[in-house]
Structures are given as C-alpha cells and as structure tokens.
Image (tube, rainbow, N blue to C red):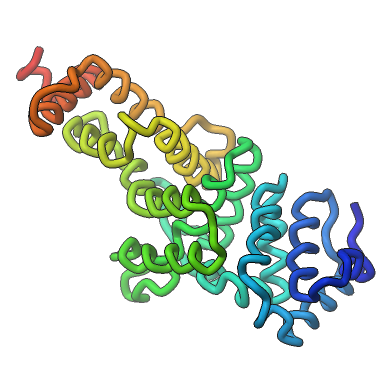
Length: 286
C-alpha cells in the first residue's frame, strides 16, 4: 500500500487531527510508509494545532487500531516524525533518548526498545492489553535522575500515576490499565526470577494472581517475553523465566487450599523448591 499526501483527506474530512492518527494507523497496517511530502503535510496539521482540541475518546480507537496492526512501531514512528506523539502521548515521546540496561546486554534507547517490543507482540498475535502494557509500562523512566542512568530508581512510583492518567485520558478499557500497572510492578521482577529463591517466587505467583486469574498470568508472561525478546540477539528465543514460573505454578497445584495464608505460602515455597531442585531447600525437605 502506498501513502501519499492525498490519502490524508480520504477519511471523510471529519477532523484534521483525527486524520493524522488514522493515517499513522493505516501506515502500521500496510507494507509501505509515508513519503516526505506526506510527513510534511502531517507535520503541518500538527503545527496548526488540530490535535490540541481533539477528543481523547476519539483518539483512542485510532491508537487501538495502530497498536493492533502488524507493525505498531510504524505508527509510533510516524506520529513521532510529525510531532503528533508529543501532543497525544507525551509520556511515551519522552522515552526516546533515555538509556536502559538489561542483563548481559548493552544500553538501549528506551523509545526504540518500546517499538521493538510492540512489533514482537504483533508477531506473537498478542492481545490489546498486552500491547498497551508494553506501550505504557516504562513511562516512569523518562525523567530518572541523570546521575543514576542507565538505572531507573523509583520509576514504579513515577510510572503508576502516569499510566493511570493515560488510561483516564483515553477512557482505555479497565483490562488495559490493570495489566499495564501489573507489568510496571512485576515485569522486571519476573526477569530476575531464580531457582534458588523459592519463597519470593511463591509470593510473586500470589501477587500476580497466577492461582486465581490464569489469563492475567499468561498475559503478563507475554508482556515479559516481548520485553525480553526485543533485545538484540534474543529474537525468536523462548522466554526462560516463563518456563520457570510455569514449573513453580504446577508445583503449587498440589498444595491444599486450606490453613492459614502463611502456612499455604510456606507449603508452596517448599513445593516450588523441590521442583526447582533448590540447594537451599534440599536438606530441609529432601
């Protein structure tokens, strides 16, 4: 599909600002991209202030369409190139140029990484809540103190109200908000899951609702897998921590749902430790 300047006005002439968003969403659905003339026209619409008074509730369907496209990064890139991203999602726009580190990896640009995670989610056929979580979960990192970079201390505390503001602004579905907030809290913890720490794993499974909300658990694992595989050299890999957590979850299935919460947590930790063949527990329960 080719995109030219005339395409911007093929959407019913309802609103120039929404036409910018529709164009970006269509670009994400197609095989081509905008030419320079089209980008210039999009930029002119943004500069004219057409997005300033746009109704966020009308913006959301276009964002959702782009996020659910085969190449969501193309929507983000187009919106950024014409200045629209800073108008409608300044929290996301601010991530470009901010460094991030990962275990065994070089620093990455958070904005570029975010786009790769979205494309990974598209390749996996992920749901809208998963894709929205990937879009939003890093927004607390944009203004981390420079002296701490590329580490992002207290980004969870900064990110929580920003995610809630984004969801309130666009009237995003509750499941999108809930998964984004859960990913904010738990994704980096999931990346650090260890066979040698059965107790924390049991507590994590409880926190993320793995025992009573299996769909939410699976979606969180999808978020974490997309975040993991978006790093250089990990494309197409299996997310190893999801496998560990699945082992832990199956081990807990045999634990009776009776007794005090403390007793259940201890029993779950022991079951997980046995499943992990943890040296820490082997002498105590073996």
